[in-house]
Length: 467
Image (tube, rainbow, N blue to C red; front, side, top):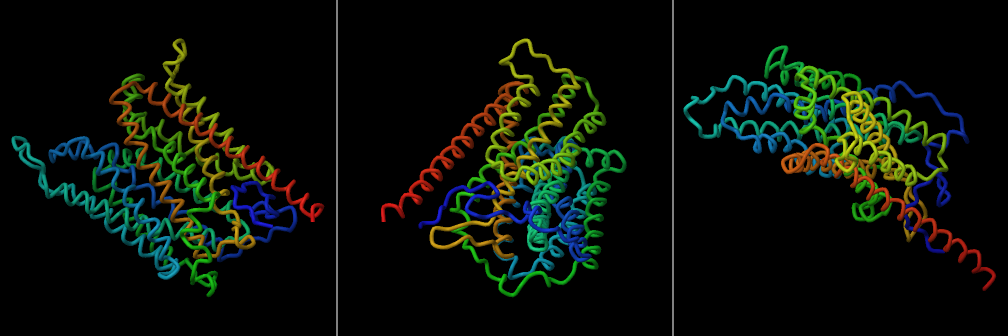
């Protein structure tokens, strides 16, 4: 009988139960010392790989203005980091099995750390005369080049960190990737608050010299702690899935579409929240930074709750979970605005903070659901289910990170465009409508899959009788 190439997302479909949620059948073994060291290195790598994205957001516009750089160019300077990651994640995912995971992670850390420190040195460039309104080309070129090189290094060690988690924890892949996503989420969202704090303490160089120095320290710790790649088998040097097979498989295809949107949800407030807090509530930059911290705190809370939920209810299809997630997110965005569709709806500061936390909670939970969808063992039309080896996991990690980075890159641009033409309330309403549309689409896909599988099962049961 032909194998089903459908979006099989529940833990028991196609006779496959993912190892991460199969803890009822066998006793879970304790982690080895090597696994604990790998987890530590991977977690701090993911954290520092994504924190530089928005690190200079609170103060870079003011510095750029001194060099006659307009605000729209500043937006591209901030966004180019995610753009480079968008390009480089699949490249490193493709070649990491040849380069080696350990070499890739060390190269990325030292590269990102050095060029972050170099970025801080831009503070000492001479400022043009106030009467000269021409763009400081030297400053602009150096800013762009250094941001590109930082992103190149960050892309390398972020991809390597995800590959470490999938290859070193074969029985806990989704759980470990969930913790990796916690680090990514915290790194992505804590940047503005951390950057603002360090800038007030000592200026431009304190921010980038401090974070760059920490990443070099992480490099030294990784060099010492990270074991040799003994967990990577010889036969894993070549992927057992081609890139075409991965990209055309329904599980992965649906997962990357969804993760791009969840990436958008993670960063949609970055360029528009601070002006809203200042204009509507009169909050200072310091108090606004504290509000921004709501997001990483709820990221930290959400991931273990979502992971434990999937372990406890592993037979409940995660597309249903994703549908419910989108519906709840739509409600949150309508309250966050508040939406002008509800004329008498009020939004005190406490409600805005609560909705920000719930937004982060739901975005992180959705990421966990899509991770499971992307990394479950996959089936083909031509053969039985094949689990992914290390090289294939690296490819999937690169694709997953690429689409996540695309969402993070696109969302601030869209939010900035929306806020120029309409209010904050209408902007969050648009995101709420997007969530509702995706909820309907995901539910229809799931219902179609259930009906088709039921029909194929009935046909297979009738065939022996007909023969």
